[in-house]
Length: 157
Image 1 (tube, rainbow, N blue to C red):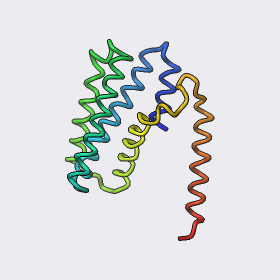
Image 2: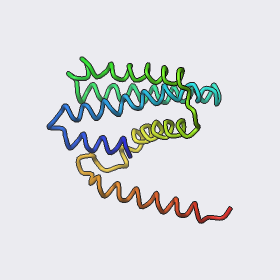
Image 3: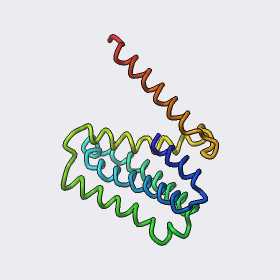
């Protein structure tokens, strides 16, 4: 939802290219940072899992890089591309110096990364960002999540 919401907000701000570029850069840097932060723990889960995850993330980062270069060519070539690289370095440093203290931190990072990857896959199934009513989408998402959580809390195993 975060990735899609940023895309919708950026599309509504196309006339203000700097805001759209900033939102895309923020998303790109967040996914790069969280990937680098979670990689050491993912590799400890299993080398094959870490390699497959790295391949999937690499494809996503290359696609995001190409998309941002096409949407924001001048800003991206001069400054923005370096934010993704800096985010990778900061994520690795953070993981090396302050290893995740709880599995919850790792789960949140992995969920955000997974959401970004799923967003890239599901983009064709969602309405065009310029036709999306973000409030209705969020209300539906919150409603369905609440119903699922309610069902989980009242289910018997």
